[in-house]
Image 1 (cartoon, rainbow over the protein chains, first blue to last red):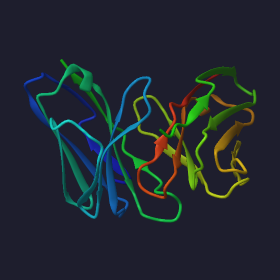
Image 2 (cartoon, rainbow over the protein chains, first blue to last red):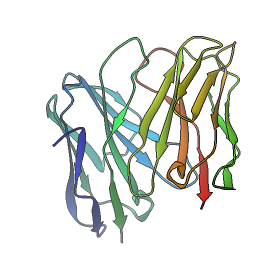
Image 3 (cartoon, each protein chain N blue to C red):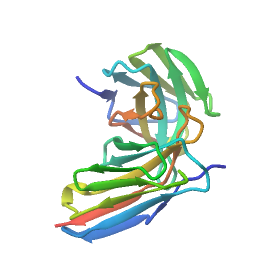
Image 4 (tube, rainbow over the protein chains, first blue to last red):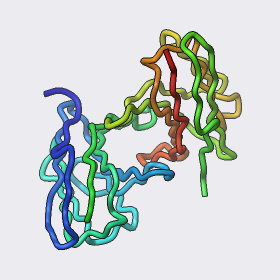
Length: 114
Length: 111
């Protein structure tokens, strides 16, 4: 595998379910991100981890819980979601540099909450 | 609130035509990135511009960063169906990991 991978690619879950999204980066980068992409909205940054430490949490509801066990893996644990949480969830990685934190994205998980 | 406005929002053209899309802000950015996103996939980085007035070329794509580092443009020459996608710009205002994103320009190139 190369680049950034995400699983699953598609997920349908009820509001009472618990599920997890997984992301793995094979680029040797030192930072990982979770973004939410919804129609007619800019990409919303949810969480940032640098060297496994959470450095950014953009007022995300507690029903989203991130986990970063090491610099290559990132999880997003989901529980008691709402229909408005349906969106494309993108994972990205970057390497701190003078070029402005260029993001390398995975293919995303299309989440539908019913 | 820092905003990046992209225009046009939608563009549908015929193969072989030229086009320019814009990314504008009232804020100054230390760097600005352009990405292309195809349906069902994540955005893919095309280029980063850092210096005011900088011009970068990537095959038929020409990127320019405004002199004041508040705006940028992307020009595509002789567009091809493979250029179809959502073009996103993202600015870095404070040299940190939190980028400011535009809504994107959705480009369709018809054969």
